[in-house]
Length: 325
Image (cartoon, rainbow, N blue to C red; front, side):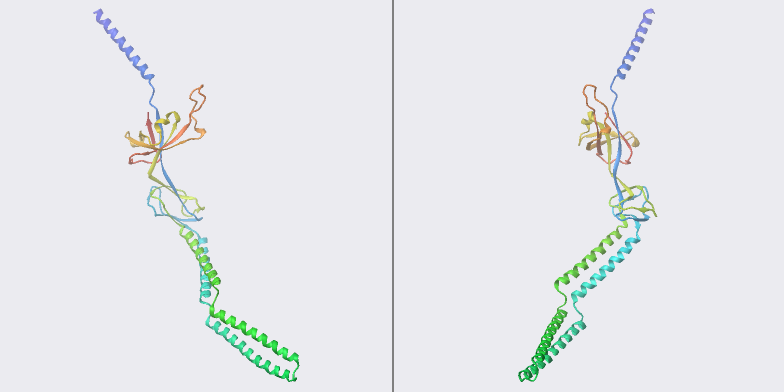
């Protein structure tokens, strides 16, 4: 009986010692290292090139939008006024170019021809007058002064007739090629000004350039929107990725192109595969600690981006992601 009791005590003590040994062994085992990151997604900011007052926002938070879908409109009376001005300038320039290309009106051409004929008639009359005075001068009837005056009037009449002929020919030929080109250039410049204002007017109706989900609406109807200020933010969950901050002594497992397994607590305990697509060093503010007092250097942190190998249903930006090593 005493032998049995002693055996039980020995067995009990052995069990206690074994349990204590196992507990101490577990206590000194290295704990699994957990890296926590966050899911992010590509964001797009929808803004306008022209300032103005928000007329209407066509979407709400959480709406799914498509490329080319109308997002919001801007009311800008200034652009409407500039468009009227530009259109008036275009009409005037086109009318001038048309006038230059067509040339003078038929009435103007006829008037120039009549002036030329009138000048020709004056030349004919003065030629006859000069001939008579010249004969009288040779006969000694009139003085040389009178003959010179008649000859001067004849020369002036000939110059006037030549000038009238040139004016008549110019009226028939129309404007010079250089003048026509200049008028056409002004017309094109005015058309360009109209196209520019029309482009600004068209930009008061802002459409989405990407597919995605509306995550934020920063301005609402009636508020002023500065030029280039984002009014609506669109997030593309099809372009989602995980971001980690990894110490450099762990970076060997997260090189570009490497894959790893991670869990998303918000989606349960199911594991998902991710592939590293980008690694970049962080600033000095992210330094962790000295490796040892005698090595004399600090371990830095790196930002690691990784994308899901397969699409993950229910994935949302802001979710935590856990990697256990």
